[in-house]
Length: 159
Figure (tube, rainbow, N blue to C red):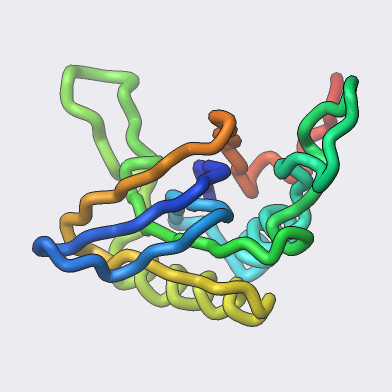
């Protein structure tokens, strides 16, 4: 499971000109699901995202890194958008291939499980519409953008 996580001041998703999900300050996650993803991948992504310290301290001091609080700490919102293109392969040709992305029959239910796991946190959660063409509007704060891939969770930091 792969996520592009953006710290936002606000974010929204529109389908057919209608806003279907929006948040204020928090995180926008573009989520890609692959064939091998399991509940372990899902839980890793949820726990890592909810506890990642990527928001500035409440009262910044000179020399602070600016990365002190999590989305939980600030009570921020989460906008989750399914995006199979995160598993695009560009190794050959000019057109990306998507064979690494899970088929909708698998990805749809797994995305819904992910949404429910984030809702269990008690934070506000909004979503796009799975499988629909969507327009995502993001006001990236920082900017801060982090790529999280559950396949890397068992990789040592340094070799």
